[in-house]
Length: 433
Image (cartoon, rainbow, N blue to C red; front, side):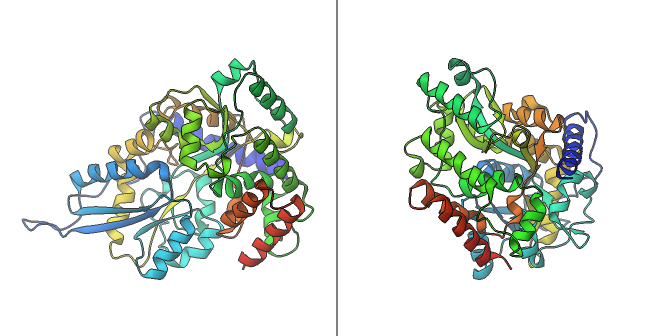
């Protein structure tokens, strides 16, 4: 049953992705961007500030550039962009607790939606909604209402440097954990460090890495539900133990300074050819482009054991969502900006050319040449139906950070595998409602 459901979802995902990629010169099904907001006649428009709290470091600079373009047709609108740090959930809670609530913020959907939906407005009837790919809607839907605009389509796995693989005589990507170790041995023999690990960050271990654990459950969604309801535990869970074995492999064949290496540094090290493999996603393309490097890159799924069939799918899904605070004093202006972003040619160009996002809207044209190697690798897997989803969002908000802290202690040899699983259960128990 799990395989049938996954295959169906993968097929729908691939259709959505390919329809956007091959949409030709179609125009958005949503209405045109409204006229510039703020007053009429000869009176100057009142200045309005839209505060945006978002979590993607990769688009922090392009967003500022986008604001300048937007102001050419909306001179009364100013933006204040906040966020882009690792601990987004803490920043969001602090913003609301302090009374400095953002007008627009980011939700990852699922459990995060249920936690924050009382602060969001319903966007179901917005003019762009019919153009948003269908597979992006369920995570941000509750009680029949859709609360967010999808950032993009994302995917992650192991990104690898094809030229370094070729230098080491590696002609195929690994399909299992044992094959991955053989690849590492060949890379080391050629004088190449296999992995660059960014374990100063909690998200690489506790969010993206943990997704491999959750995805390998027999029925990931039901298992997560049972976990939150206390019907099952991490203790004794084989996929979680498999993930810890993968971490051991990364540690054995990775950079010695992993615990002091952050996200930006890991990307820079990989870009400089200091390692052949990095666990990251398509969003890093913008960072590689900013660094001005031309890398010959590919991506392959994260194998946590030696089951070929269980490890042959890349993780692909709708990314995060823009949502509007119901207490905002600039709701019309916030809606207008979101509409412009996905319907105006200038806004669309920022999504594809500057943010390097795979669009979550059917009418936004793109090519893999525009978006780079990583988007091409992702579409190669999804077009074959070889994609699985994002399950870390089934966990309680904030758990990814706590899982990451536990795993940092593990890689520092402060916890055993059994103690890690016990700590995971404690995290879930403390955060689950």
